[in-house]
Length: 112
Length: 114
Image (tube, rainbow over the protein chains, first blue to last red):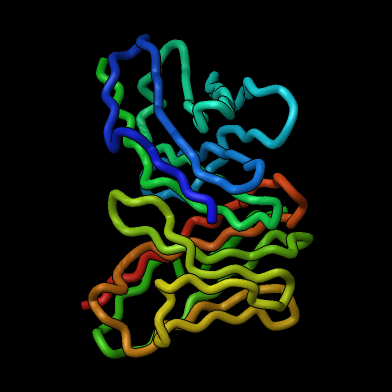
């Protein structure tokens, strides 16, 4: 069965600094990979996804992620953090049957 | 398209009582998922449906939990004889079911067992 590990339960950056949130996956079949964001008291919103094709995926709000099969990673980055990026971020993996599993999440704090 | 709708948004119940939550998926979506999320954790998979068929149940789903999706439309999640450990956010999501499609989440139902 597929699984996801998010390294770092809490990441703190200064406004304008690079954001890097780490995700490693385990899957016995070619995975589909997702990043979701959750703001307080809200549901999960899709940031971006990788299915096939280009390994560098661009999402909403300036985020992007790169699928690296050799490293089994799908790290999320943003060149310049904004205060509004403060939220909980979840990496998820699904198999061709669409059985989706989530990591434990990384809380991003942005300091002024 | 009004998105995934969950009802109620909040539920406070006494230990030992039964509770039922409802989820209305996006209308053309044939996949429906239930997850549980506790504070500081990611969504934990509970179960999912392909139309009306329940295809997988997590070991987290004890005998006190049951889910249904009659006619492949809305779904209900019932917890019998609630315990304090059941306090959590219960999330519902739906997807079209095609390979690589994302799940769309509702706002969740927050359960507090006192």
